[in-house]
Image: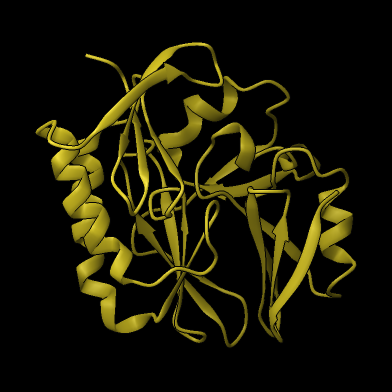
Amino acid sequence: MTEIRKLNEQTWIFDEGGVYFYLLCGDETALLLDSGMHTENIRGLAASLTDLPLVLMNTHADRDHIGGNHEFEWFYMDPAEASNFYNTQKSSGQIQPVYHGDIISLGHRDLEVISLPGHTPGSIAVLDRKYRALFSGDPIQDGRIFMFGVQREMHAYRLSLKRLDAYRNDFDEIYPCHGTVPVSPALIDELYEASGKVLDRSLPFTEENSRFGTPIRVYHAGCADFLTDPE
């Protein structure tokens, strides 16, 4: 069962048991950030919290973020996620492209799109200056960061972490889609350092099979685990 918690007067978090997504309301529009994995009638559930017109934005197109997209005719998404999205079972609807630097206005609450490729080609974060919060999707978290598979790239991931340096004065807390919520911005630096150690193979690791049955290597960084392809 999905648990809903109110973060402030205009923000709610949906918890599917380790998968989080968010409802962000302005004065004129409400934005659902991701649609979860198995919550039924997510559109109706979000609409029960606000009378505002509702739109959907996806941080990326992994299955646990797009489970309710079929309830929407269109949604905001970085077009670099299109192949991931349309190759996923039950995927439908029209992508409304968003790009780095785009502003989505909800009415006295502007959200800025920040491109963070690496975890996936079109991963994005959403900067909410009104509440000094960064909604980071999957790249910034203290849980298990998936970096295995053909479309995940560690060098791009590290560049994305550095990109956030330009915004560090604009947010005090980070709200990811997995792990602890919220986390400190200091985690960005920890992940950058740890990901460098993953690249030079200086972190301890274990080997296991992923949830998809493929062999992976799990690097244990302390701040998070990085799941990569085996050598």
